[in-house]
Image (cartoon, rainbow, N blue to C red; front, side, top):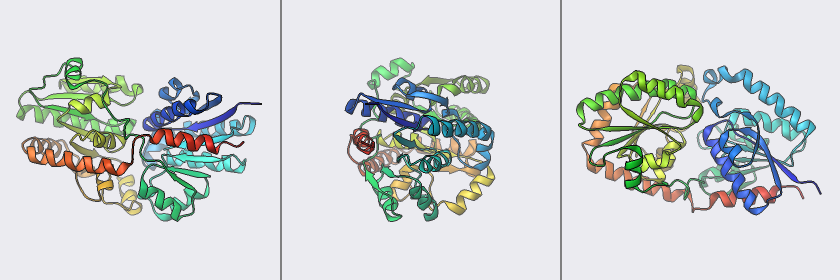
Length: 379
């Protein structure tokens, strides 16, 4: 009897992480399954045969993605050949809406069952986009309760498992150990900088964060800055940008939860990091800036008035957002100093973030998702 084979596709840092954790959970259920896919180093470490590295290609918007379009076409061609010559028993899509929906259509033509895990955000996109997603897949593994309801509404087969970050987003070190590891003083303010996991986010947001840091440093005595590199592929680029800024920033890799646990406040790009900080009740300022065309298109298509997950889940603004034209070094520095001077606001933010975390379900979402995947394998 031949071994079952699962193809996983992820094109972002967060998708690489979710895929790796899912694979590890599946292996605890069935050790005789083979895994192949596109993604990154975390998937490789989990035992996936990664055919193409894609985590550096994550984008939001049409123009931002153009630089990677030739690479995506080559990857799509390779996936098409794989589906024809060595078809998997099951396809699991993770994040990466545009690429994954193209792959889904190819797999559907060949009768391969398709699961979408960490599906496109149905609450943010028009109904027609959600219907298109549902039409091309076999099953959705939903991580938000309202997401499950929206996908069911358009006819998808949905299983709600809860969010995988619940129970997973926790520091490896105690605060005292983290202070020592990062060379920080607990008696002085600590501000974490998270410029994102995509190349254009780093290009757009890190200079703003660093210029704001210079202004904050002039007003906040003894302030310390700690920066987390989300993807090692951008490590040298980030270090070079920090050196050129002349600002003293401690740069760390693969320690995001320890960074969040010791930070009094973080300045972060919108994305998964905002939800990770939510789970750790770390106060934050969310900044985001993209191309003008993408910004205009987003205003036309996206339903919500917020971009950060904590605000979307709360249904109101509980963390400040500086977006597009408002994302300037001066505004960011002034807002940071204002928050630092108001302990009550920071404490209230922590309380509200804890409330949001309770909406994300119980720990064990990854194990529940793994059981759904194994059960979906053709017998």
